[in-house]
Length: 378
Image 1 (tube, rainbow, N blue to C red):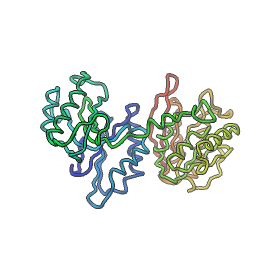
Image 2 (spheres, one colour):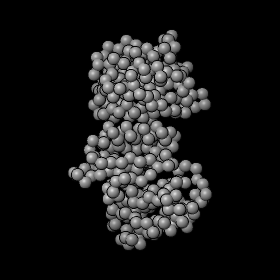
Image 3 (cartoon, rainbow, N blue to C red):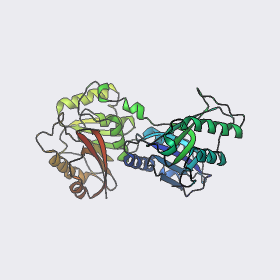
Image 4 (cartoon, helix red, strand yellow):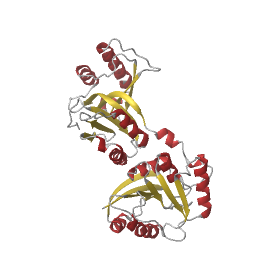
């Protein structure tokens, strides 16, 4: 899919996680709308056929905007994105009739190659994504393509020198069965850093704690801004409120088990997040919060062998919670929660909230697939 905007504008490519491309695309759209949409009169967001590459085209003709800073801010929030790079070249295999090595190399050398800094040293990394087919099955294509692109760049700009260890510019190429994308690497997302923040790294450990990457993704799906106030009514040992704090989002966590509340407090204190996070030993079915005081709800209700619903069935617990929270939420605010995939509550919950709902599935292990529900109140 090609942008409708003029190519003189800035074009960036984002490589999405292959685990759940639909969830990744929805997260990107949500975070872009929160952080950047209002700064541009014209922009375009397109996703290519392989569902792994998003193209972001930004028009900055009207006023001075640091587009690269905005892109870096997106990378600091997104968890379903691996890397971002600025466009130098894009080849659609169907459009250009590319079916072999020679077709690809011929088109690479025929195409214009936009280089921003003709005197900086450079290195090139090529990655294959998806399931390689046809001529892409040969792993040597990445090395050969790197050499060909390096030769083309140096033919155009003889003063540019190759530096594989510490280049001034790192070029990244992504190749799939649908096409080839190439440009200057802007940066990587925080996925690797977030992945390290497992429950085992906290002073108080609880086995039902959710993967921090998915928690951060859910917070992003709630369309929360810095200094917004998030509610986690089933906060457990505090994983969700801690991720919110890392993103500069204030939060209130409610937990019915006094022992776990104390553990969550120890975790917050250890990571120094207690200043923008409040913990309440209370019941999610009896919330004393006035309308307009919170910005959204993100939660992972109790389920599984290590969690307790205090004698209430999980479906009843969630439906009663939605009845409790509905009067508190304002139009366009969101409720994001994770539940087992076999639990069917979204239709009833949507009616209670008067909300539209988006549904995503996340495989965890053989005995658990989660359903991520995003409710947007009308």
